[in-house]
Length: 225
Image 1 (tube, rainbow, N blue to C red):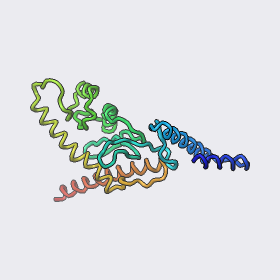
Image 2: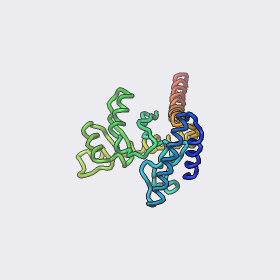
Image 3: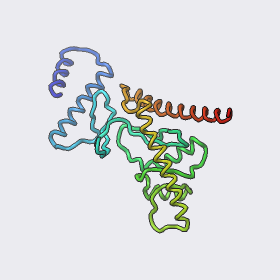
């Protein structure tokens, strides 16, 4: 990469031409990648905001810690599901802690439905003290594992939490696999960030449209019977 930059600099100095915006951005990007790689080589440590692709410079490595794939590349989504219909609450190409987005997720759901959220299910990562305080103060029932002493309605709370967890694991978790396998979200072939975003949104909302269509058809069949 050093030699490539040197040759390009030589060509640019020997020939007068007006570089396009895209060319300037690419040259600047290549120089930044070279600086990052040099720093990694010298220190043996990774660098913040590391660029891993020149053609898709917006993508960053996301450490997942999974047995099969410890590091993933691409968009990370905080998705919410309301009565089986999926929505994207937040999307970005860098790692972020979903647990910090519970409050914004609740507000998003309330804005979409114009109805106060009274019940929600979420992964254990969302069960922070801050989120527990928020849900308790807003009278929102959750499937979080209880902390502290049991209340007088502990048995009823356990039953409700079990049902919420069951619903979340079967419907929400199942929707991830369905969207990847059936709505082309397993391997996104878009070439730009904007088209990649559209690909993801269309994949999720195509699944929503088909789900709504199935419900309408089922209702029509019931009425016709």
